[in-house]
Length: 448
Ligand SMILES: [Zn+2]
Image 1 (cartoon, rainbow, N blue to C red):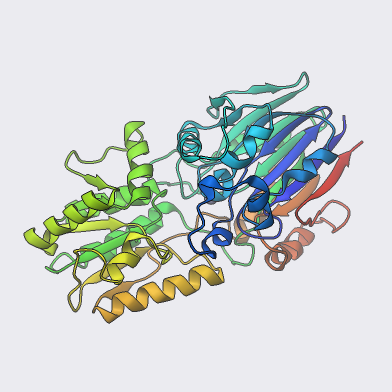
Image 2 (cartoon, helix red, strand yellow; image 1 turned 180 degrees about the vertical axis):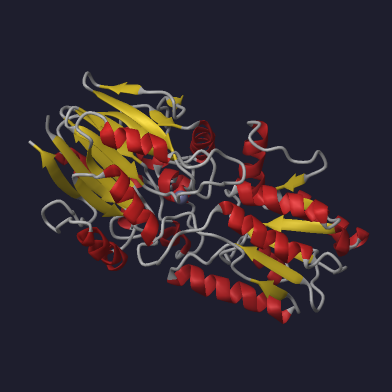
């Protein structure tokens, strides 16, 4: 059977991830992501109303025109998890394919939210929820499986396409976490089994985000302990404490909520995306928040919550807000600019339970946001966080366990993919033979 890979997006940047695998006449597309920084750099761009081709030209969504080079039918669109750089372009591209969108339940709920916001295209692809213990037939000879992995969002998966020539493992976005806070541990056992089934692993597409980082990415429980230490150290502080994190990082939000209670403060989630992700997780029964946890997304209800905090005393509350990357329209940035009823006093604390995504736009915006907060007297706790991506030791381990015939590094620009190359070479792979460094829009023929 002919197996071919199309490297559609995410091979020249962090963002707009998209890869297609053709096995004979059947094609599966993994991820359709958005490169948000290409959108934010323009003032007031509303992607909801924009046409796909304009967004492709901006570099914001994958250029899927390479799909016309693949001879076959798309049988499924499979987002690995609910981060925007993996699902953010579904609303702009999926309607071009007569195929269902298949993912784990939390991811499907987030995709549903994306599709509801879409105003240009009617996207009516079927949404199919699939769990890691299920299989889906792809054509007559192949099967799709979602292996449970741990990442900075719940229900992350590494999809595997089982073909007669071996498995293709789409390995984006994970860390090997044996002790995540609200989920099952990383399923290495299943990867081991896949490596030993049939023809083994034909190809492994790897998330090289942190290929330049030595050692091992710590567990979420490590970030939880760090956060606990920071928050418990503030137990006697009677002024304002504000925390921010990735709103999609429901495990971290859960820890923040819990430690707020421990130090005698009422947690309140503020910001539209805080409400969206945590509200979705709560409705699905995936988290157990206290009954009195306020979640407010709309401007008026947010302002009301801030007024209540100011009236009843900042020392009684922990606002958990959006804006960890300094996004201009996010809550913390607005607080820094003095656009909300919340006033900082000298010595008030701001906890960033996040790391700046190393990208010039984010770095600049975050710098500005921090300066605005400091000018009001706030003190900053930075980097109370662990990465969601493998570091070098995780990369070695995955190659060891899977023993793939071919390796395709992804999820980075060429400069950072370059950091993965010597690592793979040290394990016996060779550029141009079985280690394929690709650009966006290429095809790689693995078997004939
Ligand atoms: Zn991710």
